[in-house]
View 1 (cartoon, rainbow, N blue to C red):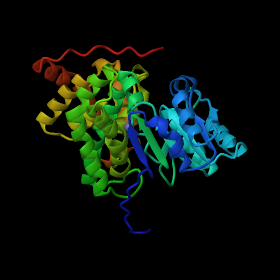
View 2: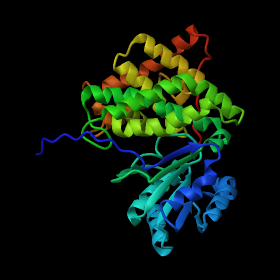
View 3: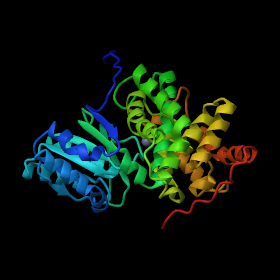
View 4: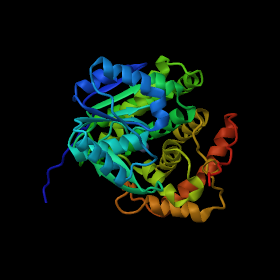
Length: 382
Ligand SMILES: [Zn+2]
């Protein structure tokens, strides 16, 4: 066994953000190849077609668009890789949500061409990373695929983000708030990150910066989305959600919050919640488990309530009587290999179960003391 410990920092080659930058997709893709394949579902293509086509034509690039279904399945990835080979494309761009982007990353890697992430919302920190999540046709998790490099380009148009549903940005904030809480736990443990044996200081610092920006700008950024306007606060939150949180989680590491998110597949009542909504429950549970400062926990509850993120069992479709589900989540979150074992102390299912079960009482008390609304029960779609 080698005793070499690698501290690794991973990042996309280019990150481009701003209002109307979608018009520049052509010139950005031209830096990567001469025969791009664009992948977007019909809803997204309807929104971006005009600007994307104009930009590509201006640079003399052909416009070839492939549609997309719902999930990044192994079959979809293989068929996109085949399309790349058939059409002799040298760069592939995924335009839209997380699944489209995940499928494009995996296909680009498989076919050995450059790939670009073009998210149309700031709903998670996946677009910058060197990994994809592969699902079944029914949307069940199959595997993570890790790639030796990050996207060649990440391009995010804040005008599109401003016009996307508010719940997407709320979810992105939930995902990004977890990043610093998890990275600082991994740093304490000297645990593994997503890309190496040990975190870099850079990964941790970017995670912390993302946290700071979110506390200062999330509420005004949500106002901007309600008005469908791009403001400096929205620009700041988009960068925190997409770039800083993306670099922070990948090179800073994940811990309990995301493992608890993953554990929620064991409770059907939580299905239909966004990634970031579930992650937020995980972050608060982690703060309680690690015995964080009482004031920090209370402020986190108050802030995430104002943002519109769930912080009670009620808001994820559970009650305090659902002890079987809470136990099932705790058990799934603590299986071998989960990132929860990056915490700086041994984590048992019992510890997670107790922390998760206590959310309801703590959050209701804080919300009451701070004059915030009571939680509303979440009903999963059938
Ligand atoms: Zn996440």
